[in-house]
Length: 204
Image 1 (cartoon, rainbow, N blue to C red):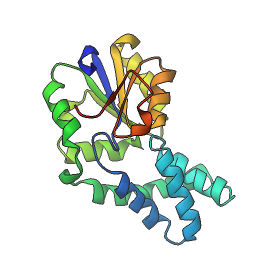
Image 2 (image 1 turned 120 degrees about the vertical axis):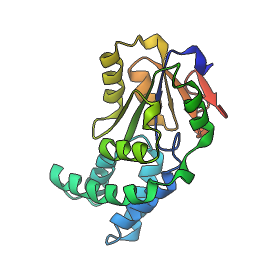
Image 3 (image 1 turned 60 degrees about the horizontal axis):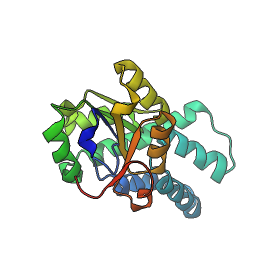
């Protein structure tokens, strides 16, 4: 079914890299000086919104959970602290999801593939390079640009026809990004997505 499409856009966390538990750990570490109850509330928001960027999540933590104002610069500072931890913990080949990665390795020379992720773009490119998987993708895109916009930019930059493209993701945010850009969506690694999109992938 997926091979019927001429272009594949991939989410990263939970689809190519099994990183969600590590990202939980990152938020706990960065926010260790704040009340546990507030950090737990953020973790709940983070798990429900896997496709959203850390910039959105830190803003949510301060503005919605702590009811404090926060500047753009401050959000960037928290995101940078988070990124330092992520770079050290996620450069671990054992976290790669071989079910999807084997598919990527097999077909990337025949089907153009791109990463569109809620992860920080610089960090994402660093991780892909260190894990030696960047060569399988035509381009790698991440936050702070929202995923809906990233998908739009990839389609426009490459002049892709929407009917030829599918986005594979593990969160509702991924489905929204595909839906907004009128391309197909395939859920993976999250059974709550079974009724969304053109197909749910249990195994590649």
